[in-house]
Amino acid sequence: MVQKVIDQKDEVQKKERKKVGVSKVEKPKVEETKVEVEEVELGKETSYVSDPIINTVWDQFENAVSRTRELREQRQELYLKAIKETTKFNGVYRKTVKGLFEQSTKLSGGLRKGLFQSNIIKTNESAKEVAESYKSHVSEAASKVEELYLTPMYSIFDLMERTENVIDQNSQSFFENINEVRHAWDEVTDNYLKQVRKTHQKIAHQLEDSVRVLVVPGK
Image (cartoon, rainbow, N blue to C red; front, side, top):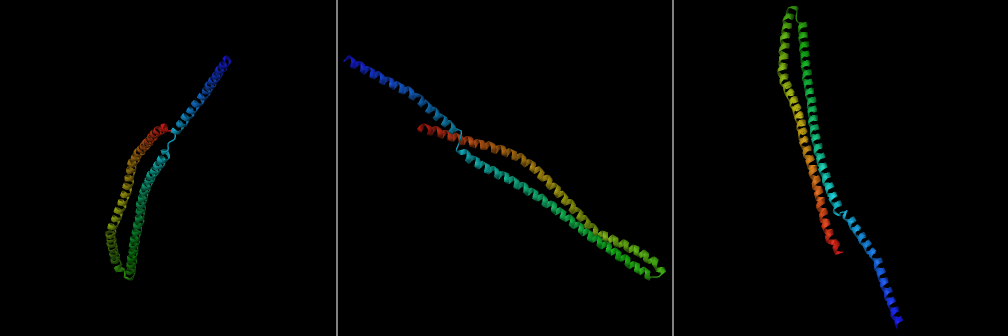
């Protein structure tokens, strides 16, 4: 009987030793799994699902703003170029008209000289002096008449040229001032958009973090 009791006691002690050994071996495994889960959760928190969507939307918006600015500058350049081309064309046109009037004046003066010269040759010596004086008076009167109808035209052309130059200069100075103001506002707008983009991302990150806090314990 005593031997049986001793054997039973030994068996109980062996079983208890085995249980203690198993529990000691299993505890580190549980701790390791907990550490791995925490590391995975921390790794997941660094990436946000909303980042690609937000970046795509904001990149498209910023590209649209930059294209609008480029189109605005191109329209200004085309407007100034059109003014310069128009001024250049009008200047060539005025020079052509002036040249035609000058040629007609020279032609009429040459005709008068030839007509008087032929008449003087046909007249006798006594009448030459009278013809010469008459020729000088007629030439002087003709030149005055030419000046009378050419002066208004030259004045109008000169006024047109000065007006076109003023328009060209005023347009350039106007767009320069406008561009300075717009560039200043563009810088303010760019800084504002950057801040709004960061705020948008922060709000999205906070929402995702709050969702993670609610979902992780449920697992």
